[in-house]
Every structure is written in C-alpha cells, then in structure tokens.
Length: 265
Figure (cartoon, one colour):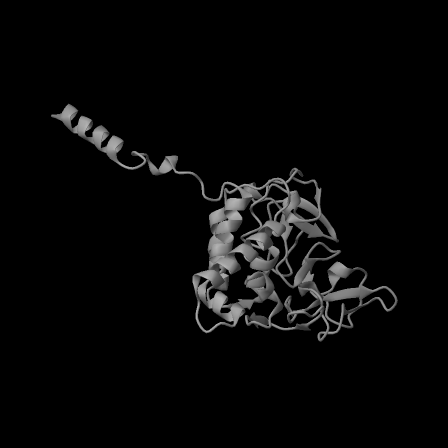
C-alpha cells in the first residue's frame, strides 16, 4: 500500500509541469545585483508613486514598466561593484516598499531609499576586518552587522552598540544617537548648533560645518539653495526637475515636478 502511494506521487511529479521540488530548491530572486534591483524597482514603483510622478490621471502598465526600468538603473548605481550578497536583501526590500507606498518620503525614508541607509546598509561584505579603518559602511562586512562607526572623525569597522546620551562611548563599538557625537571626554554629547564653538566638522549638527576662520558651526549653504540632502539640517533637499538646487524641507511629497521622480518614471 505504501509503495503504491509512493509510486503515485512520483508519477504525479513527472506529469506535472516542472516536476516536484521543495521550496528550498527554489532559486533566490535576489541572488544577483540585477535581480535585487529589479525587485527594488517593483517595490518602489507603487501605484501611488507612478501616478504622482507621471502626472497621469490613471496608472497603466506602460507607465509602471517605465518607472521600474528607471528605478532599476538607479538602484544599480547605489551598489558598489563588488561584495553584494542577498543575505539580508528581503529586509531592505520591505523597507523600500513601505517608504514608497504613500508617495511621500520622510527624512528617515529618504536615507533608506536614496542613500541605502538602514536596513539597506547590510548588503555588502566589505574588505575591512573588525577594527580596521573605513570611510563608509560598505567597507565593512555588513552581512555580519559590522558598520563604520565614527569617532573624532575617524571610522572603524565595529558592531555598533547605541549608548545613552551623556554616557561613555569609549568602547570600540559604542555609537551615539543621531544628533550626538562621541566627544573628547569620550561621552556622547549633543551636536553643536549654529554659532557654537567647534574644532572639527563632526562636532556640528547635520547640515553644518565648522568654519575654520570663526571656529564656529555654520550652515553649509543657505536652506533655500541646497544641492544635496547633506546640506540640510533636516537631511532632505527638495530639488525640482531641471534644477541644480532646491530648498531644505522635512519631507517630500512626490509629484511630476519633484526631482526625485526623474528616476521613478
């Protein structure tokens, strides 16, 4: 009886299209950069995004396909030439989908989908080992959660551990919260605002630099003429289509005139 059931199952598999296989044998859809970026593009090109960026009255397959093609190229440009791994790709793709679903991007979402910030900063096995110098997360083995932790303007590959504001940050992997930095007394102190005395750029808040003449924190550029997100204290620079500069804002609602939409249509 048992042999007959086994024979029937094998016969069914042979007659079925493609045969029978376990889910473990299914190919990884994110195994290559091309595959991953194709899925990134599909996640980004929600109906809301396609409608907003195209300016059309109704979404259709042609508009969606165009968005996917453009966003795929954008995604490929975000990744380095070597070191990609799909080990944590699904977390990144989920974040991309959630960010774009309402066609409005907050500062945190822009960090993820435009600059491959958390959780999309865990896709590369960098060449630098634990404790070695780095300039960006991709220099480290992000697959094992090593990231580039900066102290006194110098980065090293560590598994970061966030410490409370004001607490010691002397440990190798100790990292301060956003808006704070590891000070000379090796404690997390608040980043300095405009007009505060400084010795180096890393002491100043986002969008500010330490002016070498006055030795005070000053704005990189006017909030009305930013050219990149890093120019803004909000970490968001809204640049219109066909413009080289824009203005600092807290979030961007996508529309046909929004510069971000140029690679979403």
